[in-house]
Image (cartoon, rainbow, N blue to C red):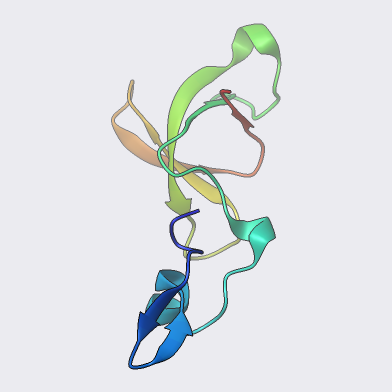
Length: 86
């Protein structure tokens, strides 16, 4: 949510997201950065006993899905189906 908080720059209100990307942030696109998430690394079906932990790190540059850091393989992977650990 810190990318959505307004800051004042040159007497104009803006957000860090808007300054970086030159577009306003949509609330539906925000997610908890570095949150632990559960993904199915093998076949992308979310079954409770077949998931693995990953860390949400950002959005994919080629599509509107999240990218995750997978600690076991030390790689960055993109998934559209995930569950955040609460």
